[in-house]
Amino acid sequence: MASPSEIRRLFMEAYMRRFQPERDPKRIRVHEVVSCLRKSFLTRVFPRPIAAEKAVILFIGEHVHLILGEELRRHGWRVEEPVEAMRNGVALTGHPDAWRDGTVLELKTIFTLPREPLEHHLRQTRIYMALTGAGEGYLVYIGRGRGGVRVFQVSPCGGVLDWAFGRAVTLSRCLLEMVAPPKEPGWLCRYCEYVDLCRNLGESFKYVDDTAVTEGNV
Ligand code: SF4
Image (cartoon, rainbow, N blue to C red; front, side, top):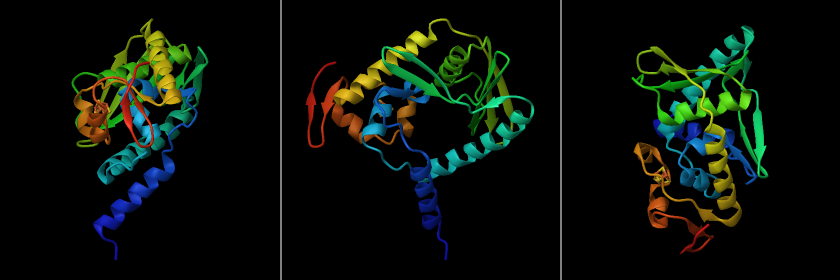
């Protein structure tokens, strides 16, 4: 018999198999720099299963991307193709949802459509615009709750790659030296798998090893 807990476990197993963190500390993904850097660090150093409910939501989002991506590709968009830039020996890598002819589309599934674009989504779209040389961007929210769609036009931002590389180089150095970046508290902490570990690490940079956490600086 299939029980809810068995089905949830299947989702979690599928998540752990499909979403592997990048292992090379010199290669930093765009989603890592727009997230809390400490969370991005901990996700690589101490991989943990996510909550089953979160895995279900992620897979729903992934299938929306799959279906829309197929249609966009038929209309000539480049879908989920890798983009990359390098500075100071660190590669910033990612996969814009869709882009062509100087335009980037970022697709987000969300339960309730936001009135304004979320800050980390805006940054992600602007980074992809910079990495693809696009002058136009659109952030497309698709509502899981009521099936609505909301689209925000995104203007380019000249300094966004400097900002992104600043964070990418910090994260890379933290990974190489096993130093946890400072906390970046915000509403996303409510959904973070590392609240306990983050609390133990305190506010600022800290060295981490297998058995002990001690004060340090970078
Ligand atoms: S609890 Fe908040 S500050 Fe700490 S790692 Fe998670 S997202 Fe970052």
